[in-house]
Image 1 (tube, rainbow over the protein chains, first blue to last red):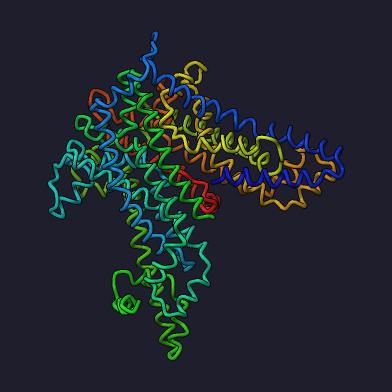
Image 2: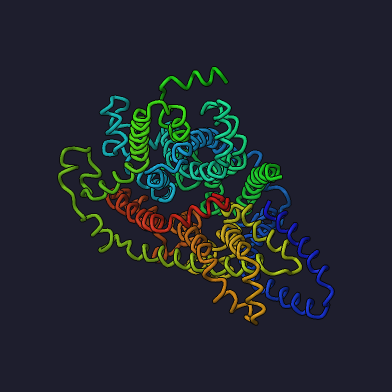
Length: 318
Length: 316
């Protein structure tokens, strides 16, 4: 979206430059100064992105065509890393698990985030404070919270079991992290609690951009709160909805911290996310070639999701 | 629509929510009894605040609870809760954590160095680039801008393996500067986007006036434009700091020397435990220490954070 905007502006600039040809020499001197300054100013950013993002991307594609071990010589082996991925049960399982996890958390994060956004979007007394408090889990970050979850999910001593056993819902000795289902449940609850604040903020920002007059005229026409929400807010909010959904889907798809810290992928490899599988393949199994092939697949999937996002955003801004 | 309207008359669970938006509209409709309307508005506000406190509690109480737990001695944290959990509070765990053999003070300092460096680098590079993209015409500007935003599309998690090898060749593994450069790169899309918009919002006359006065490119930025784009600079620095402080996977991959571990990596090491014995009290206290700078920085600078969200520049 932004890129098209930029090229659009570039066209406008050319137009302006052409219009200014009445005084050719001064114009071109200023233009040259501008061009030099512009390139010099943007060079550091381009250099960093080139070195730490674009080059590794290309390098990763190259490595994925080799049997590169972490140390030692390597051979070019064509597409065999990719063809072996089809039979790589750990990778396939991690994809399935990550998809399942993404499917579980996306809707609750959105629904909770939407309800919270409706709650905090007004300018009533106290809303700013509520916004800040609800957003805190996101600011604190999933890493610190995962460590806290590790402590609180311990059998016999963790708060989770203590509370649940007092409510007669669970035994005090429940070992959350050694059961795939329980571990996934706990992590999903943690993530929904962590991420709905972000969805709230994004949707709230979108809601506040909708002119109040639209709601007023809807109310004059006798529209109820719910029908105004459905017929005005949701359609006008499509941009923010798309943005928040994609952020949460991409975020879930790239999940690593919570699984690495809370379950370490276990029991077995049953709660291993895609990024974790890549990490293990590269650094534990030292099969950098295979890990890079997995990464390329990941880039393509995430790229597709992001492309859909841009597609939606662009269609809406037209 | 009629059925929807009739549904509204039932006082349901969504009552505080529906009050949030339309308090003003009820005024004229209920104008017949002014005192009644005022009372309703006041009770509406009470319901709203009560609901807000309840909802906020869901999000904040767990964090507060962990702070409370971190003040319990380690024997309490790793045993079934009892009355003693509440009576005996101490800073012992923090004292152990910040001195002695499980010293994580060094890791806190590492995290701070990387965080501040990332924030400064991101702010500087984004400001320059935003200035260039926003106010200068040059061939290829659209292409360069597109390339910088491309880092937006590349999840850093997916280039970690090749980046590990590349950083090894560049001697940037086990280097706080290397880690900060890596973090800076993946904060640039947000930073450059925010800064370009900041510079585009500067009134053209100001830029032209500076030029007519003969101010150089640098002079214009430092003395004329700086105050105007300062909020944008704060926004990009804030995002970069929070990203860096809470990042785990990159630090875990690029740091193998424990004296250079950032706080989250050090905690993950502590979680693995020595000979299988994990000190949960220390782990909890460490997580609480990790949480504090985020909260302080965010609460102090949140209007800049929200600016970034509103400009839609964020991507998780």
